[in-house]
Length: 212
Image 1 (cartoon, rainbow, N blue to C red):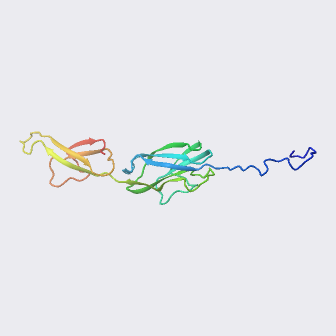
Image 2: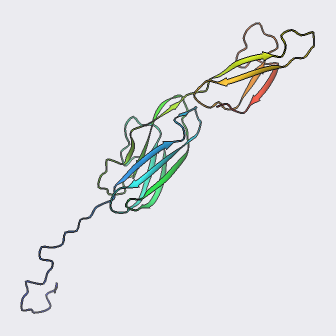
Image 3: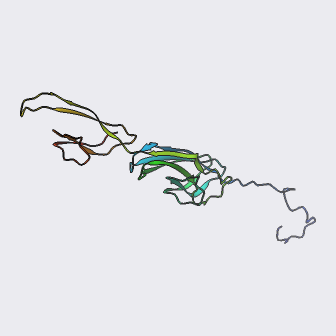
């Protein structure tokens, strides 16, 4: 009789339970279980992928939030903070995980970079712990190193020939760098008193589509 419309013999016993019922509202808690790049050493502008696994370790559903990837930060990202790559998740139930793949991640220049992931990057979800949304704990190092092409061997079929007598030459090219070399040309110089330099016109050219 919340509006007190009824005259009762006892107006003091209309409520229950005697001491009230305690309801605990536990919010979601978003964490990044793993951040896995397809490669940790790449060349300048060489694209790679990053897989992020997001988990809701709370007891309530997390709704409408973003997950961001940061190519290089000196310290962990803190929401709200825009990322270099961002994906949207509509909902994540308690205990559930979502796997997101960010493609085409690149770095323009050689160096060492620190990659991070952040769940709820725009701080849209009220969580039980707002400080555990980033991963890895110390960031993921990514090394950007250029390739290094060398001629490992040059082997002519003959070392003595008659005038205008043809011979074949086998060249073995090696990439001793840490990153993929894109397409390039290999030149053969029939006669030169000094070692050729980049851009010197060769007598013969061969195309190489790339070298790991």
